[in-house]
Image 1: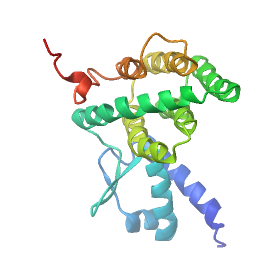
Image 2: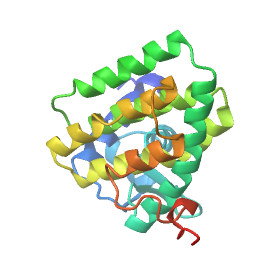
Image 3: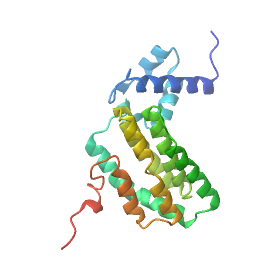
Image 4: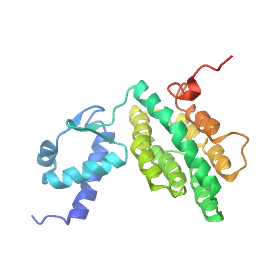
Length: 221
């Protein structure tokens, strides 16, 4: 049997692994062994490793140093500690995006928000992908690749974590509909500070997302 070109093989393998994770063939927290997966899918370990790395970028897979790749699994405290960093980093992204805002950026972000607001139904993972598209667009418009890489290492795993938990369709739609407020911050049309806007945004999905940040500290009398 003729082997598929490496790029095609990886794309196919990513799609199959993604579908199997969504379909709960591999459960959250389960280790994904390269050799075992290679045997199961009838391929060598190299495309498996490349596919797992791509799934890690999408937030479906987590890399634990010296232990290997695992299906996305976070505790509530893990999620809240990541959120404490999101407040700082995404607020900075909003500020930088607003400082160099252009009509092209406005059109791009508005297009994504309108796509979110028109979302009717689909898988939770599809909704998470659309959610991430907006946030990544904001990060990319900052012009700071280090900020982009840092946020890309933190946020996808959070969004997919919720998707794999199987939240209700009406709740998914409700959360997608709350991105215009972030767009208004970038456009300079919001009364909220970037930090306040991010906290309010995160409150759509989490209770006290500021818990482990300085925003969660008691106010001085």
